[in-house]
Image 1 (cartoon, rainbow, N blue to C red):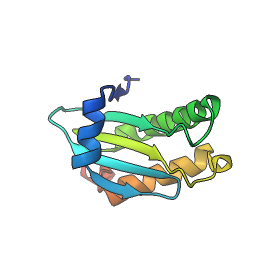
Image 2 (cartoon, helix red, strand yellow):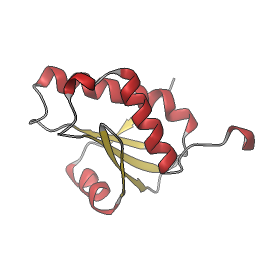
Image 3 (cartoon, rainbow, N blue to C red):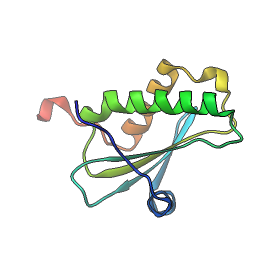
Length: 118
């Protein structure tokens, strides 16, 4: 199992958030930008106003795990930033809700690889 490459620098986040295409789900917003690499970069941003540290880290773990499960089925060469919606209820942060949101976003962005073409 390969390790997910993460966005870490502020300028990397800023570039994706300003130039990337916006997609929205029920709980998660995302910005997706084509990059020059042959792998995807993942960035997570959950506001301090959303919840305290323990819950924010839990949300990040859930998003990261869902992304890791879908990583093999999406196209390579994109920088993806997921943002937790401030208005979304923290009690709804469970594995299946986040999975549905991420799949919905990837389908909207046309990032899913067709299994028939492989």
